[in-house]
Image 1 (cartoon, rainbow, N blue to C red):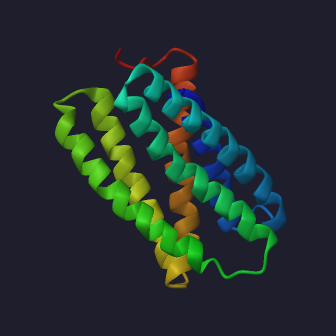
Image 2 (cartoon, helix red, strand yellow):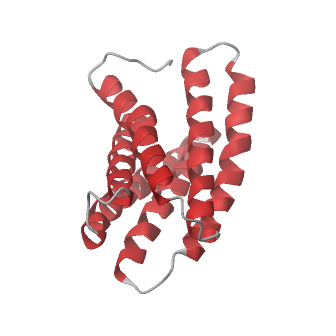
Length: 176
C-alpha cells in the first residue's frame, strides 16, 4: 500500500509544484488533489481497519500519518473552488509540520542504520519543511510562492514518485 500512496503523493506534489510555478491553472489543479486525497483517504481507512482487526498498531499509525496528506490535498482542492485566502490551510500546515518534524526525528532515531527507516525519516523531514513553507506562504501570507513551488516539485519527485516507481517495478523492496 505504501507504493500506491507514495505514487499519488509524488504525482500531486509534483503537479502542485508546477501549479505554484504557474504551469497549471487554478481550477485544473483541483482534480489531482481530489483524486490523490481520495485514494490516500481510502488507503488510510483500509490500513486503520486492518490494524484494528489484526491488533497491529503499525497499520493504525500508517493510516493516521497518511491522513495528514489526504486532508491537505482535499483542502487544496476545496480552496480552488471557493473564495478564501488559504490561511486556514496554512495554519493546518503548521500543525502538520509540527507533527512531521518529531516524526522525522523519532524515525531517524529508531532507524538503527536500516536503509528504509533512514530514508523514511529523511522523507518526514522533507515533508515537515514543505508543510512549514505552506504555513509561511498561506498562514503568514508571505510571498514565497516560487520557492514553495520549486521545493514542492522536488520533494514530490524525490520522496514520492521516484521511490514509488522503484517499489512498483521491484527495483526497491521493503523490509518484511
